[in-house]
Length: 191
Image (tube, rainbow, N blue to C red; front, side, top):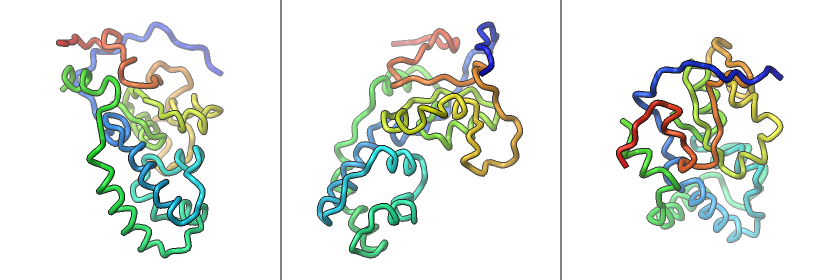
């Protein structure tokens, strides 16, 4: 493992790109609640951490083979899609901001919670703040530094340039946005 570089002179952050779903609002937990209600209805097991980690950040992932091969529902993919859409419609009004989201939005004009998003941001040469969902922490613990460097190779994201280096200072992990260090990024807070 490369030594941690401590003296990098980054310019101040002027703008951020946010992945709202599961980072700013608790939609990942609401989706899991909705899906688990349906799984219980059909006598199937609750979503595991490993399945959740595979599905997070992947559009329409509960309609794909990974999910359906695991869950083995006694209904069609189409019926499950209809029922899950309806269950989520009922549960989504209960969404709420996650810790630190309102403060950071009021002070900024790239944060990411999915492995694919972190990898894409790094490959685009961006600094990345990875806000880790507890299920993702468990599943990617052994590959944590590879994710932060954009080096997992799990996703087809153009060519391999520019790959980050382990501990190069371009990515950090925090458990929620309350832990965000505004000063480190040259951001002056109004609140």
